[in-house]
Image 1 (tube, rainbow, N blue to C red):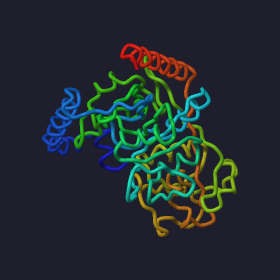
Image 2 (image 1 turned 45 degrees about the vertical axis):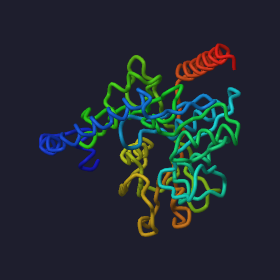
Image 3 (image 1 turned 90 degrees about the vertical axis):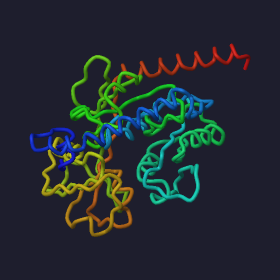
Image 4 (image 1 turned 180 degrees about the horizontal axis):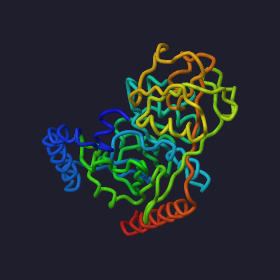
Length: 339
């Protein structure tokens, strides 16, 4: 963990002077975010309602908590249940000239961001990127005829009304020091967890009202030659682990849990734009999110480890029940309004 992560999630005595200095900025952040929420609640700032079910998958803290694997899981599961889901992403890191933009097989990371490309490789449903969530959601409804919109992130994007909120949290780090940015890791205070429909923990120990999500690792895939795969047990150890995600330590810990001997651990900031010099020689294992940016610069011995979300049957049944309940309520409202 870097110095800031330590200050946020496991502060020692020497972190507290810095935290105290940052508290006025945290207070300002608290005031501004509270005013913003109030403007939406009082309808001074408008929130748009979409003619489809809207599920937001987000978090109250910064950094990677495992949202993207859960979005992929939801898209697949809802399609199995007969829904026509669409996925909406902000497209962080992408710099397309105009939005909304549908993501397809020829989309580039530079256009739509790394997470959108990663999801595109795993889901068989429409995927749109747009920093304007309401506009992107309407694109999925009007152009792709989706009846369920799954938002990858956007818990704090109140301009889009939502029917179901799913908060994903690192089960070990949780809320850290429970302070808002910048003194702590939180975008919203921990009370916000009580307003969400589902709290999903990525690892750790669950309590009442929480649902466990585990990430299941698959076979290693060669970054340069994706038709080549390798069992993690057949690795020639030790290897170099590389990660440019929100919480690189989680990836390194997963490899160690799989009994992979690590010669070195190299971490970068989330959404890092890789260059050839970032990739060392030798056997390198990286995340799939990083791999989508390295296909043109990777050497022959670069591999990525795909992971898939596994959730409990209780979560599945509760989610599907909630979807049916929301649908029934919306239908009754339409009948009442004579629509």
